[in-house]
Length: 297
Image (cartoon, rainbow, N blue to C red; front, top):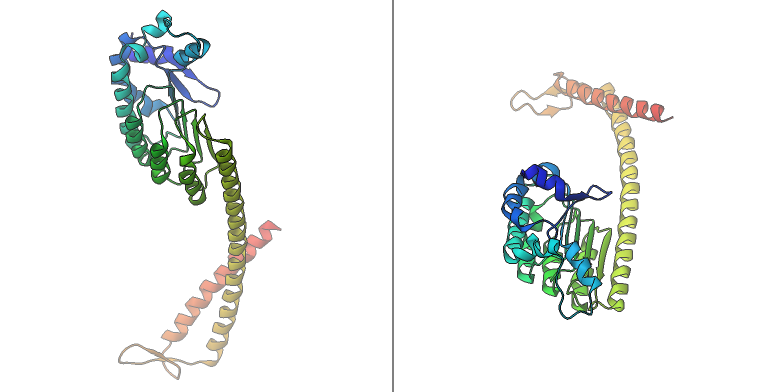
């Protein structure tokens, strides 16, 4: 099987265009073929990416009370089960390199992978190198509070959505998250899990609402301030134009012969030429403003 055929067979595409790969369904025999060719494939084709082991997770959820069970052959012979340690290292190496090279990755979801906490920390530290990433969703991973601290300390302001679902996050993380929300214009920051209390969830929702209200107020005031400044500049330009015209009518300037300083008095035309040039520039500005107002009408 070629790499292209492999990707076409095992990639699923969500309605929003997210390209998903489930390592609990890709056979282990394709491990080398997949990771040798995936970097170039991702750079060329992927703007929204999801890497997961959903099929294995769903099977485990269907057998919660069984102390021991056997995976179906498809899962048992998959990359996730047969090359457990190697595939997580390969994912980490891929993502770290991908963050630096991609010019179009906007969304990343990592779900139910066997990435340990230290590996997740290393990946998180490299996220700032991806200048285009706007959405990060981490589901059922070994992410702990110090990982959340690192995420909030390093993630850039262009991130619009962060979700930490069923990870090992506790109430300790709320202080890092609230600080992040205060400093960044994030649309969504969601945390769920057994160790993240409802009280912390309420604090998080309140922090996001307050930040959105503050940003909305600031943006509205900035917009109004810009309109005011533009009108003020137009008025000042008109006043300056009137003054220049008046000066040209009463002044016959000359140029001081030694150092070229303009002095009011009888003599050279350089100063009047300067005033004339400035007057013409202001008149052009005024004409442009008038034409813009007429087109709006």
